[in-house]
Amino acid sequence: MRFTIDMPENPLIRRCNCTICAMKGVVMMDVPMSMLNITQGKDALTPYTFGSGEAKHRFCSICGIHPFHQLRSEPDHYGVNIACIDGTSIYDFAEVPVFDGESHPADTGEARYVGVMRYQKFSG
Image (tube, rainbow, N blue to C red):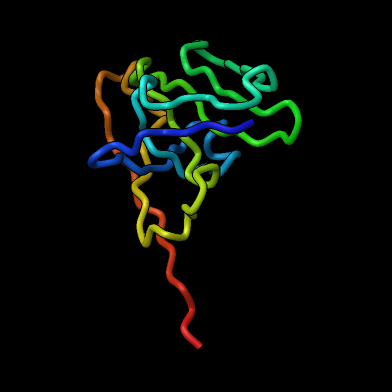
């Protein structure tokens, strides 16, 4: 499966602490759906939903990777897995805010962050 994205001018990079995101460990970038174009293997994408069914997670049925999902909080956006973007690594980011998906804004009326994940490269 391959896709291209038009890089947002000020990309929102984050993690999420909801049950599935915490297990996947994905660092994601929010991208309007119109800015993502699947160029190969669309038929290999398998959808997965749970709970409210509003977030639509996509997995590659060939390799098992989670490349992106339709966000529950912004249904016209994808949360794109940073590790699936050529030339980008989750380790490019010293700090990544953690979104409170456990207490989702669709349920609580309030979007908030609960922490930050840090990466510090060892020197030596």
